[in-house]
Structure formats: C-alpha cells, structure tokens
Image (cartoon, rainbow, N blue to C red; front, side, top):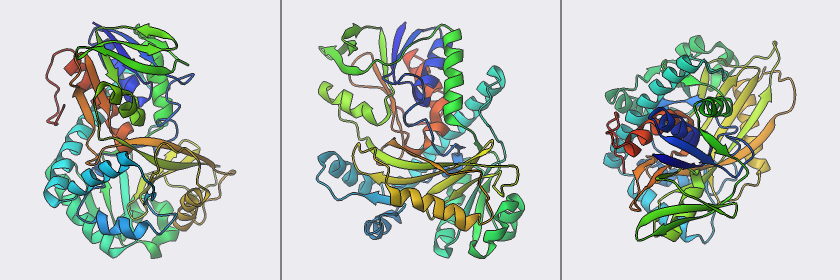
Length: 411
C-alpha cells in the first residue's frame, strides 16, 4: 500500500521505517525543515521502562493542588478557562485510582519493554550512533515519603517484567560516584540496569536517512492544512495547497494530532504537557554523571550525551504555549547544582521546551481510528523516545493487517 505518515518526530519516523520494512510505499510530511525539530529535539534522553508509573495515581491529586501555588512545581496546571484541559483533567482524576494506575503500569511496561528491544535491534542492524549509553537508569530520592511510595511502585513494575530494584544510598553512590557530594541529600534509590539513554534527535535524524535509503520520501516544510474524508473514509490530506492521497494515513503529530482530527468528529484525550530542558556543555574535568538519573521528587531526568549533560522534565499544562519560563528553567539548573555542586560546566546552558502529547492515563493511543484508512500513533507523553520503536513496529503490523506482538491495549 501507499502510506502517508503525518509527522517526522521520533514516533513518525519510526513508524515510517517499520512501514517501509513491511513492504509499503511510504511518504512522510512535516512542517519543519528536517526531522525531529519539535518534541523530539531536546528531550531527557532516556529509554526508561522504569519510568512506567503514570502521573495519574492515588498520590497525585493532593500533590497537584499544593504544586499549583508554586511556579517551579514539577506538575503545574495553569488556572485558565480551557474546555479541552477541563475534560482532560476530569479523565485524569478518574485514572488516579489504585486499580487503574496498576493496569496502566502494565500497559506501559509491556509496550516499553518491546520498544526497548526493537531499538536495540535497530541500533545493531543499522550501526546508529546517537550518544547511546547502556548503563541503566538510577532513580534517586531525597524525601523519605517519596522513597517509601517508590518501593511499592518498583514492586509492581517487577511483577510486570521491569527489573527495577530498590537500592540503598551506598549502592546509589557505587552505581554513580558523581553523586558523592550530594550524599547528605539522598535517602535511597531504584536502579534498572537494562534501561538506556541517548540523543533522540540524533537517532531520529539518522533513522530518517536510513528511511530515505530504503525508499521513503520526505516532504519537509509542508504545513498540513486539514484532513479530507468522505462517508467515514479518508480521501486525502491538504498540505501546501495540494491534496496528497494514499491508501492509508498515519497521524503521528504529537500534541497537534487532536487538532487535526477534531474536524473529522474524532476527539482524542490528548493534551500538550510542556516540558523543559537544559543542555549543559562539559569538559574532561566536569564532575558529571555517566549513569542516567531520574529525580522522582522533582520530576526531572539527567542524561549524559557525550560532552553534554541534558537535564529535562516537569510538566506545565498551559495549552499550546511554547514560551520559555525563566523560573522553571532556573529550577532545572538549581537542582543540578544541588546534586552536582562540583559539576564545572564548560559554558552556559541552552534552554528548550517542547509539547509532549499526554493522555490522562499516560498510555498512548496506537491503532485504527473510527475513520476508515486513518491510523493513530500519539499520546506517548514523557515516554515518546522510550516507546517510539515499539509503537512504530506495532503500528506497521496493524496497518499490514497483522497482530502486534506486545500485550497492549491497541485501538
């Protein structure tokens, strides 16, 4: 079949690769001049099956209320009249029960484990070089209540196949010696040895090049005006003043997917969660971690990408606003300085923000839409890089009429 993929982020390009591998003729359309220039550009860099605990869990509602009073809070809901956010928030609260959170963890772990394996296969097959490190992910805690809660969450993940084990402060320092100066802050941690880190932007650009070598066509700088449908079936995509037609269409436009699908009568429970990152240049003398870290209390991650340190995280629900908030940027640097007071960077940090497509459950939406010939691959939230390869492979199976491998709730 001729398949038109809308979106050239890490999810869209991964979808294009696996669709082409399945024998389809694939074209990708994106408004940017190259691949991975929006949400995939400067994210946290983690392949983190261990990050499967959804935001929606029994502990979150009270914390979110307290955080609303802080401009630098890990999870910030802007007080504004937004019907889409109001509806999303109600759905989010429904997902905060213990049973729903447990089922969502199971879904996320199943897809993330599959995706990590597919990424490893791709890296080996295509000799991709994207500052990959296979040293695991260490979750660190500086609050005893957070740590106590995490012990239970880690046990649930182990039950579903993610080997996230609880470790002491001494074990944290043995895993990542650069934390020694922050010993007095730490109360414990969790370590997932099989998790990885790497630059999602570099990966996506290289995979796009391999796609081109395999016959995939990319049309960059082409804004998508609207989707065309008749009698419940896709008829084309209007982009750049021209109608582009295919046998199947894949909407992988991240947070912008629901905006394009809404005129077709489809209402996706996907809302943009703005995340921030700081990229800090390093020297050979910098005291920086080499194991990727997650600071669960502050909802930030820290990854070594060659001679750069990427610090990213937090979630701000403020519509499609892409303005950098100086307070939230400063909070990232402040936390890095607390954990690594002897960092000695090579220069000033570069700040960035992007809109992560979040579902209330944190479980992505992958599969067939109610409109014939239209498929969806979005809603990955903070785990787009983690789930990209698995989502792309599963989506290609669905388009091809095959059953995907992971035990996951596809559309």
